[in-house]
Length: 140
Image 1 (cartoon, rainbow, N blue to C red):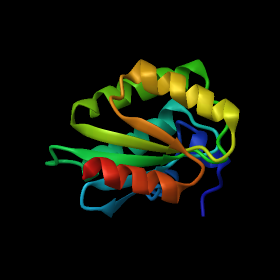
Image 2: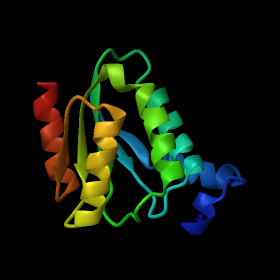
Image 3: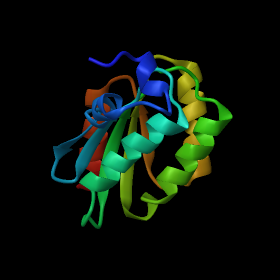
Image 4: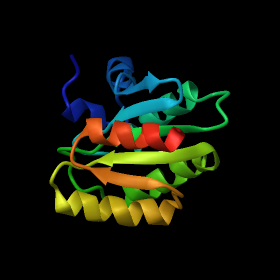
């Protein structure tokens, strides 16, 4: 298995990419889960969003949950890459459920980032399960 630290290296090989891709999966018909790594980089975001974009091909609307429980605060490069990648799917996005646990710092950073991305609908939750339910309600 690939270690967490190896997932952050932009030179990561196929094993690291495969491990990252496993962090994005379909939960329901139009609902997806993205489990962030503890220390995000532009590389990790690109791999995760590449996988999400593959899964949502052909969908006119969808929602996703981001598990941010246990992540470290992202730096400016990561926040900028997130804005770029999210902008590519934002027009089809119904809702984003952000699972932040009890981390007030991550919640604050995620809130500022969500506003700067232009998410039309998002919510914060203590658990992934709560975030999934919010996304299901938003999808109707």
